[in-house]
Image 1: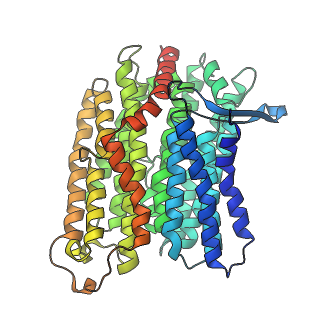
Image 2 (image 1 turned 90 degrees about the vertical axis):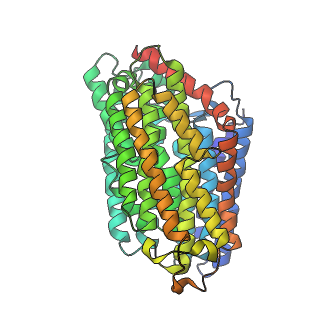
Image 3 (image 1 turned 180 degrees about the vertical axis):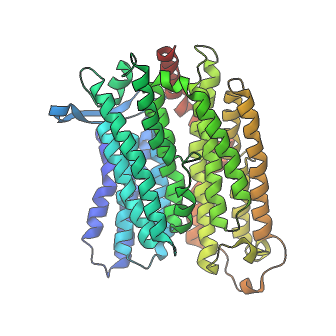
Amino acid sequence: MNSWILTAITFLPLLGALVILFIPKAKESAIKWTALIWSLPPFALSVMLWVGYLKSSGGYQYVVNIPWIRLLNINYYLGVDGISVPMIFLSTLLTTICIIYSWNIKERVKEYFALFLFLETGMLGVFTSLDLFLFYIFWEISLVPMYFIIGVWGGPRKEYAAIKFFLYTLVGSVAMLLAIIGVYFYTSPHTFSIPEAVAQLPFSKNFMLQSLAFWAFFLAFAIKVPMWPFHTWLPDAHVEAPTAGSVILAGVLLKLGGYGFIRILIPMLPMAAQKYSFMLAVLAVISIIYGALVAMAQKDMKKLIAYSSVNHMGYVMLGIAAACAATGGLQLNDKAMALNGAMLQMFSHGLITGGLFLLVGVIYDRTHTRDLSQFGGLGAKLPVYGGLLAFMAFASLGLPGLAGFVSEFFVFRGALPIYTVMTGLACIGIVVNAAYLLWMLQRVLLGPLNPRWAELPDINRREVISLMPSVILTILVGVVPAVLLTMFNGSVSRIVGMAVGAGG
């Protein structure tokens, strides 16, 4: 059934990148339009995927499974469920938005847009892969273009930030590769298939080996999320990356870590996940509080939002930890609610924080500074910009009726009966989160206008077009969360049920 659609979604951006490489460097307008045109079919196909997905099933659909390297039982195995479809939609949407926003790029235009499309193929491949070998290849592919996007088009310390990003991710990748090899040798017959490995539960008779595999996967995914104390690459990468690079980094690449926890770690290693779930909850709460407190101390607007990502992804990990908890068959609905909240938070964070990074880019392009002390009074001077910044900030702090509220509510409601104390402590993060975002708005939009910005132009049409999808979807998910929950719920319930049944 339409098995071609996942191959098309995944590889059309790569084909577009190859087309761009054959366009002469001097034809910058042709390069930009080619990038935009090639980004649209994957987005359209992701909408078709969403509409055509049978939500009541919760299982894998649009599956293609073709033998690839027969000697090692490696297959070209793609498929999606209710967890991956929204992430595919988010990836294609944000890539198109970033290409539109990047229209004013002047340096190495050809390489920039080709790398963005190549990066899109890597991200989409992770979300569509059902073979661990294929999953790993796409995971690595997503690393390389972002390294160059930061290192070539970034800020003054771009080389340092790019190398730090690369080394952190590489350490996690090596750990994940060892775990994948372990899974292969502890399945019979040996397989890289994720559904087959989940069905066989490798290491189920050897808890020490299951623990080693758990921590190897954990390292790879925790670095990507990132969780405290593996987060230190993120602020540097965000601050130095070009605006569109920060949007993709926050909007999609961080989600690869959370997706890995849900797709691989919970169902494949359920006993270790239950055993160490409280440690996950502790690290999640530290990330929530630490991220919020450090964001409060920032003077750089972009670094403030970067640390807010550590805070917000902490809510994702709290939901995942609650879903892993060893409560047997009890609190099954709470676990499902927490995991639904984690998925909602991943989607909402991509929209909201992506929008905030775009807005930081808008003001930086005009003023060439992100120092909060240099602003003030811009709300009256730039009313459209001020309104959009206030909207995104309120969405980020969890204003009811917007996407940030409903996702955090589901996480807290699901986690509270399971980890009551940890959930209570995480509420501190909500208070500090509101404080640093309101403080940011006060410093940027209110007070007397800095005379330097007396002639500053308001946000232009192209920038508004880039932001509108995030604004509309933030309202839609906040008012009608069922558009996502009906997609997530079948797959979430299946994963939680499998983990509970396997882990006892």
